Length: 372
Image 1: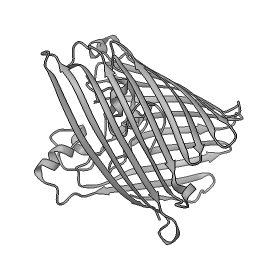
Image 2: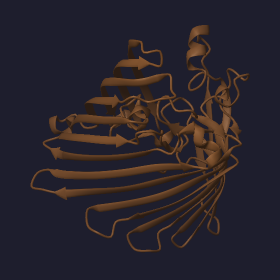
Image 3: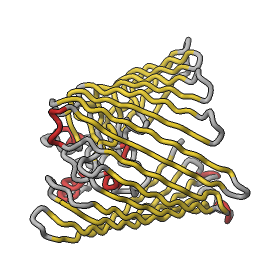
Image 4: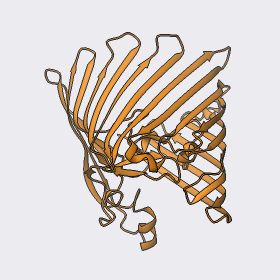
């Protein structure tokens, strides 16, 4: 990934980001396994925008990376997802950030995501968008004509951050419109030698009647409490409940998967229909031991999905154990970040035929990133 932003001229600037990916030694099985999210060779101009800043308002028009709760591209694979459209950010109101955005094209991780007949290329900008939907949901990608969003973040009260966002997508799957809602409150209470955190999140989605049979008018309500910066440790516990009969569309793009009870690799399960989820997490910053830049965490999550009609898996229990260790180097190697992730997934499920099965998986990810 190469990024360049010009110096401003009368408030205007140009920004471009090129991405490329090559997997010359991938086997046929590996290509088939990763064709939707990792396997694809070539290059793409993921950002090419005209920016304009005046006062406390910033405008970007063109291809760009976007990260908001309901509209976000994922950067967890080789190719970071991008959008084509326009965004406006304003901070004129004290302690308040206003965001508005419009997009009409989406760059997926690979070309196969948008067209099964096009295998082996990096993603391109198309009308096929990723939708963050609970595992087993009827639609995880679809044609979208236009999408737009409005968001407000307020920090007027000390230590409290309030966020509200709306996003709409038109002509989804050539059937109808979709509305998405997000509300969140995050409160940090400083104590003597540590901090207490209290978080609450609500998300919901609604659709036109033509999409009723897809069962996508779900919701997610989650809460989290935690102790942070306690001699380098962080400890948190989260719980959530999803809609009993419908799946939630958590957002547009693969970026909005993160919820309080989502794990590293299987976040989408926690907001699938009729699911109760729990997660405990312990983190540690090794700077307390003199290893500045080294951090780690381990988590355990349990998802309990009750009986759900109309899907291949009618019920299930997920047990996930995951850890992450990341080292951001300093000194002569400043800019180099190494990370190792692991997740073990144990799923007991009952399918539509009434057969109980158990599926186990282990997945590792190792990343080396160098920013210069």
